[in-house]
Image (spheres, rainbow, N blue to C red):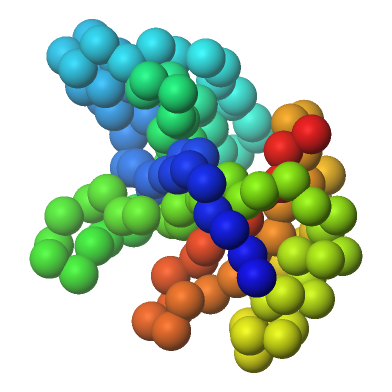
Length: 129
Protein backbone atom coordinates (compact mmCIF):
# COMPACT_ATOMS: atom_id res chain seq x y z
CA UNK A 1 0.00 0.00 0.00
CA UNK A 2 1.22 3.50 -0.84
CA UNK A 3 1.71 5.89 2.03
CA UNK A 4 1.83 9.56 1.03
CA UNK A 5 3.66 11.50 3.73
CA UNK A 6 3.56 15.09 2.49
CA UNK A 7 2.38 17.40 -0.23
CA UNK A 8 5.68 18.05 -2.00
CA UNK A 9 4.67 20.72 -4.52
CA UNK A 10 1.94 22.12 -6.74
CA UNK A 11 2.50 23.01 -10.39
CA UNK A 12 0.75 26.08 -11.81
CA UNK A 13 0.43 27.20 -15.41
CA UNK A 14 0.63 31.00 -15.61
CA UNK A 15 0.31 33.42 -18.53
CA UNK A 16 2.95 35.98 -17.45
CA UNK A 17 5.92 34.70 -15.43
CA UNK A 18 7.25 38.11 -14.40
CA UNK A 19 3.83 39.24 -13.16
CA UNK A 20 3.34 35.96 -11.27
CA UNK A 21 6.79 36.19 -9.68
CA UNK A 22 6.07 39.74 -8.51
CA UNK A 23 2.83 38.53 -6.93
CA UNK A 24 4.20 35.42 -5.23
CA UNK A 25 7.65 36.76 -4.27
CA UNK A 26 7.19 40.48 -3.69
CA UNK A 27 3.58 40.55 -2.48
CA UNK A 28 3.36 37.20 -0.67
CA UNK A 29 7.02 36.80 0.35
CA UNK A 30 7.78 33.41 -1.23
CA UNK A 31 11.41 32.70 -2.07
CA UNK A 32 12.48 32.21 -5.70
CA UNK A 33 14.73 29.12 -5.73
CA UNK A 34 15.41 29.02 -9.47
CA UNK A 35 14.12 30.21 -12.82
CA UNK A 36 14.70 28.74 -16.26
CA UNK A 37 14.10 30.68 -19.50
CA UNK A 38 14.14 28.59 -22.67
CA UNK A 39 13.77 29.30 -26.37
CA UNK A 40 10.35 30.20 -27.66
CA UNK A 41 9.20 31.98 -24.51
CA UNK A 42 8.94 28.86 -22.35
CA UNK A 43 9.76 29.69 -18.73
CA UNK A 44 9.63 27.81 -15.46
CA UNK A 45 10.29 28.82 -11.87
CA UNK A 46 10.41 27.11 -8.50
CA UNK A 47 9.27 28.98 -5.40
CA UNK A 48 9.74 27.92 -1.79
CA UNK A 49 6.82 28.11 0.63
CA UNK A 50 7.71 26.54 3.99
CA UNK A 51 8.98 23.05 3.26
CA UNK A 52 7.02 22.82 0.01
CA UNK A 53 7.37 24.30 -3.45
CA UNK A 54 5.25 25.86 -6.15
CA UNK A 55 6.47 25.02 -9.66
CA UNK A 56 5.28 27.56 -12.23
CA UNK A 57 5.23 27.05 -15.99
CA UNK A 58 4.66 29.66 -18.68
CA UNK A 59 4.55 29.27 -22.44
CA UNK A 60 4.24 32.75 -23.94
CA UNK A 61 2.99 31.25 -27.20
CA UNK A 62 -0.09 29.62 -25.72
CA UNK A 63 -2.60 31.06 -23.31
CA UNK A 64 -4.25 28.72 -20.86
CA UNK A 65 -7.65 29.55 -19.47
CA UNK A 66 -9.25 27.99 -16.40
CA UNK A 67 -12.86 26.83 -16.47
CA UNK A 68 -13.99 29.94 -14.54
CA UNK A 69 -12.37 32.26 -17.07
CA UNK A 70 -9.21 32.89 -15.02
CA UNK A 71 -5.82 32.40 -16.59
CA UNK A 72 -3.96 30.34 -13.97
CA UNK A 73 -4.59 26.61 -13.85
CA UNK A 74 -3.18 23.73 -11.81
CA UNK A 75 -0.85 21.69 -13.97
CA UNK A 76 -0.32 18.98 -11.35
CA UNK A 77 0.32 18.36 -7.67
CA UNK A 78 2.89 16.05 -6.13
CA UNK A 79 2.81 13.77 -3.11
CA UNK A 80 6.02 12.60 -1.51
CA UNK A 81 5.56 8.93 -0.67
CA UNK A 82 7.41 6.84 1.88
CA UNK A 83 10.76 5.61 0.67
CA UNK A 84 10.43 2.39 -1.30
CA UNK A 85 11.92 0.96 -4.48
CA UNK A 86 10.14 2.58 -7.43
CA UNK A 87 9.19 -0.87 -8.77
CA UNK A 88 7.29 -1.50 -5.50
CA UNK A 89 5.42 1.78 -5.96
CA UNK A 90 4.47 0.80 -9.52
CA UNK A 91 3.37 -2.65 -8.31
CA UNK A 92 1.17 -1.09 -5.59
CA UNK A 93 -0.43 1.20 -8.17
CA UNK A 94 -1.04 -1.72 -10.54
CA UNK A 95 -2.62 -3.71 -7.71
CA UNK A 96 -4.95 -0.77 -7.03
CA UNK A 97 -5.88 -0.61 -10.73
CA UNK A 98 -4.08 2.69 -11.34
CA UNK A 99 -2.05 3.07 -14.53
CA UNK A 100 1.21 5.02 -14.59
CA UNK A 101 0.84 7.70 -17.27
CA UNK A 102 4.50 8.74 -17.32
CA UNK A 103 7.68 7.61 -15.64
CA UNK A 104 9.64 6.62 -13.73
CA UNK A 105 11.58 9.86 -14.15
CA UNK A 106 14.87 10.52 -12.36
CA UNK A 107 14.86 13.90 -10.58
CA UNK A 108 17.60 15.78 -8.75
CA UNK A 109 16.01 14.70 -5.45
CA UNK A 110 14.42 11.33 -6.27
CA UNK A 111 12.28 9.44 -8.77
CA UNK A 112 8.79 10.46 -9.93
CA UNK A 113 5.77 8.88 -11.55
CA UNK A 114 2.76 10.64 -13.06
CA UNK A 115 -0.83 9.40 -12.81
CA UNK A 116 -4.22 10.84 -13.68
CA UNK A 117 -6.96 11.12 -11.08
CA UNK A 118 -10.52 10.12 -12.10
CA UNK A 119 -11.19 13.66 -13.40
CA UNK A 120 -7.96 13.86 -15.40
CA UNK A 121 -5.87 15.95 -12.99
CA UNK A 122 -2.20 14.98 -13.14
CA UNK A 123 -0.82 13.60 -9.88
CA UNK A 124 2.90 13.17 -9.38
CA UNK A 125 4.32 10.75 -6.82
CA UNK A 126 7.94 11.20 -5.78
CA UNK A 127 10.18 8.87 -3.81
CA UNK A 128 12.98 11.07 -2.51
CA UNK A 129 16.54 9.83 -2.24
